[in-house]
Image (cartoon, rainbow, N blue to C red; front, side, top):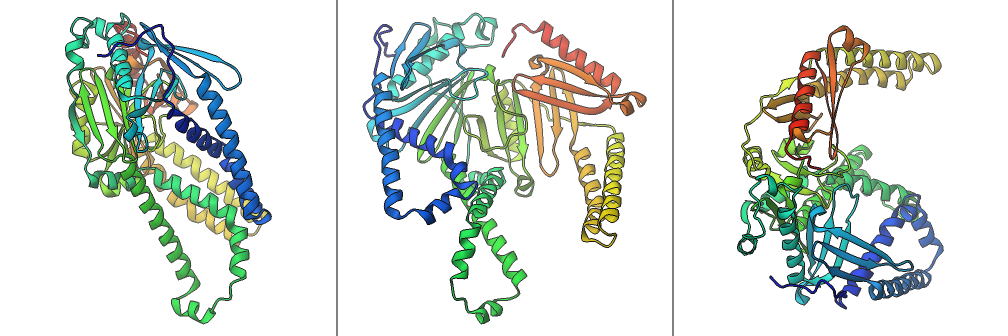
Length: 510
């Protein structure tokens, strides 16, 4: 492995200026997108400004971004030390950041297609609890990026607070040179059909639909004005069918376009996806236009979430998320970048893959349901709310008003959704491994070791106190999780088991 002088401050490659410029422009567009599009201001400006004015504004933005990128590039320095990487950066104010190798959680290497001929990559590091990338080195050589990655892994194995010093099997400093020569063992490769089905099943379908609705809302006034100026042949439109048929046909066409876009995005993002096991590390490689590598120590994955969306139920596909400290929420969708995600899994492949990913044997769980009293109490509350709404609508408006009929018609479907919600909830304890299932049309299955729990709380409502029931609230390093409406004694046993495993764990891992 090539050694780098720990004293010399190094510059980025001159080609990194392109990355900095493009990244700055993309960030500017993202930060101001909703300002221009959300309220329709962007299309109002287009009507007010001409092409020449828009071109001058765009040129001014690019020139400002170019000057800022040049200054940022000139002031950017980084240095590799014995136990940390140090970066000096800043546009107006000079900042210095030092990250210890042992603190690093994720190592990401990204190589867009325009950097491949140059042999350069975008290298980034993430630490526990950080909401975004802790440190990024845009435009360094792949050889240097891989050197830093292996150095990070070596220091994690030698760190006395890490898992290696306690018998996790991670190599020590003496045998590390032999280990780094080995390549990862592939444990999963996604086929093209898996990626296409993942595009249909992932939540990004609804994200795209929401974005399309936002754009349509902003363009609605402009579209109406443009359509009103067009001389339409009404006889031809009548020949196509009724207006309702045209409406539903248009909605179906838009939905097909959104699904097609989601499939293409999934295929481009996860192209040639492979998951590798390298000792106590897991590594993913994927991407068509931007080939990305993500390396995660297995010990940093605190829990796993098995996700099946509503469309995933129809196409029989799941995806797996490896949870880490600092994750946003427990119920986020499957499209976010930067998370440890394995796409396009069938149910059989899902459970067989969970064992090598988690590093311990996996037995399929037999879930215990929550008490049926949950649906009875919640159903009674729903009926009371709907009855109050119907009485209020009938008194204030009219008993024959459509709002009253709509509220009455929604009561039964709401009870059906409540019943489905109750059916989805369940839990299973296998030794020190706890499984928690929830969902509505789809489902989320969370699996984690009880020693990873940070806080435990037992809560009771007045109804639960009378029926000797309780809800168990668990706080994990990446978020909160609950098991509602279970027997009080069962809740106490689960809470005591979590506390015992927390207090007797050999290592406090975050």
